Length: 114
Length: 113
Image (cartoon, rainbow over all chains, first blue to last red; front, side, top):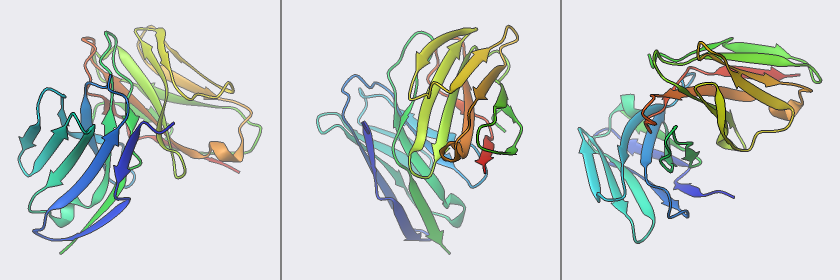
C-alpha cells in the first residue's frame, strides 16, 4: 500500500523558473516530512524537512508548503538552476525513540534547461 | 559526503547465489536503516537496527537478513538471489537521539544475472 503519493513523475523547467512537486499522504500519524534530492549514482541527501505544526518552511530557494487538513505537502524550488536537475523524493515518518523509518514517494525527475 | 560508507559499490552475481552488503554508519550514529531502490518499487524500507538490536521491519523478504555488530557496522545478507533482486541497496544512519534526519550512503548496485 503506497502511503505517500508524489506527482508529477517528471518535470521540465526553464532556468529561473519555479519547480513545484506535490505529495499526498494517508497516515495521519506521520509527524515528519522530509524532501530528499538524489543525483545519478549517489545516495539521497536531505534537502529540507517540515513538521505538521508548521504550514511553511523556507531554506534559501527551497520552500515546503504543508496543508495538514488536506494531507498534502509540496516542494517549491524558486529560481531553478541547471544544477538542481536531479530526482526529488518526498517522504514521511513517525518519530520513535530509536529512529524513524521513511516512507518515500515515487520520485520526481526534475530537468532544468539552461 | 554523508559520512556513511557502503561496500562494495557494484556487485554482479548469478541467480541462486548469496551476497553480503556492508555498511558503516556515521561516527556516533546508533541507528542503521537499509533501503532497496528499484525502478518498479521505488525506495522501500527494508529493516532498521538500533545499537545492535532489530527495531523495525519493512517489506524485507525472508531470503534477506541483516545484523548490526558491536562496532555498529551493519551487513545485509541476500540469499537465493533472483533476477528481481537486482536493485540499488542503500544504507542510512541517524543519531542516538532518535533523530529523524537519515544520512544515506552511496549505495551498492546489485545485478543478478
